[in-house]
Length: 253
Image (tube, rainbow, N blue to C red):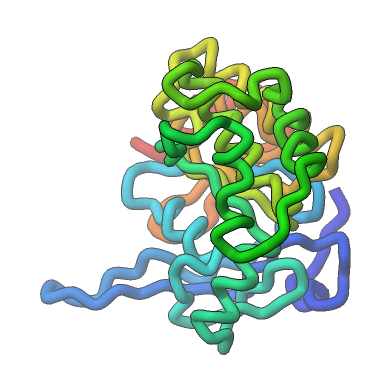
């Protein structure tokens, strides 16, 4: 893989997300907690990256800081060429709405709305015009176009998560952030969602950053970053679940 420096991120379309010397420190009565310690990493456009690490390693904090859901204490974060530092909350919200998509363990769908209307809802709430063809295209990318009229209670867990994916993709985000997206699914449904994620990257050039504790889920990614004590301590590319699990076991010793 070509090495790309974080300082190229503002002008290089090959870079979706860049972190340069990022730290995140929390104050507590017991003293400072260093959740991230000088993270420098580039997520290339079109890449699918899994982030793993022991409990308390900083993986969720890394995702939140990269997505602008939390502020870095020091260092620089750029998403789609835009530095997050210094943005007002309004501008940050606008950037998240236009350049980022989010998928979590909970689907967060409204049971009273159809799959179609759940996908269209964020745009409607933002006062944007919703094109039927674009909503159906988002559902088609996750294989749910034929179930657009179904409501969440009529769908399986895996199907609901794919609707949540379509909702995140509707705005054509530069990067899709996924936090344990298969954590609430059975093995079969989870694999179906992971196959969709991999196809989104391979076939549509979607950049995906996914936090997971599951080596099988991580094996669907192009590369896996391993965190420990708020630092990147390892990386594997195109690894199978066994290799990933072995690396995790070493970290947890």
